[in-house]
Length: 114
Image (cartoon, rainbow, N blue to C red; front, side, top):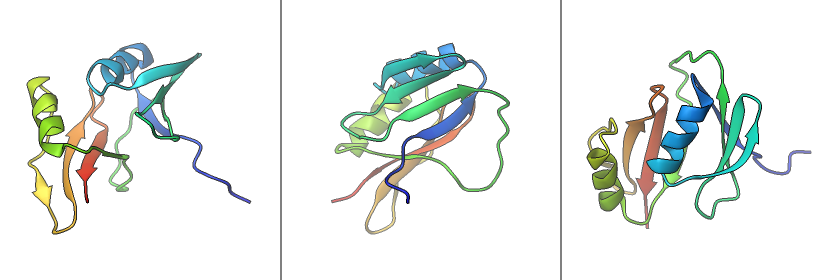
């Protein structure tokens, strides 16, 4: 029935500006430009991020994408240098992680684990 996750979708106010942010700050690559949406590839992941222009409403449903990095300290430092809103670095005994927010205040997370 279900074969895979096709994409993760986030609503944004301005798809063009958000696409530039994800490309310049996160290093994602825009792979498709549609009317009111963009598809961005993420490193060597087979699951892209789709950003879609629309009504940005933030709920507390706890849904957000988690990205993986091999060097969480360097990634954290680079995002802070770019003035991205980030939480403190956390370690739960298995994972190292931190939350951060895009220009539309969408919650995102980056993790590292061995």
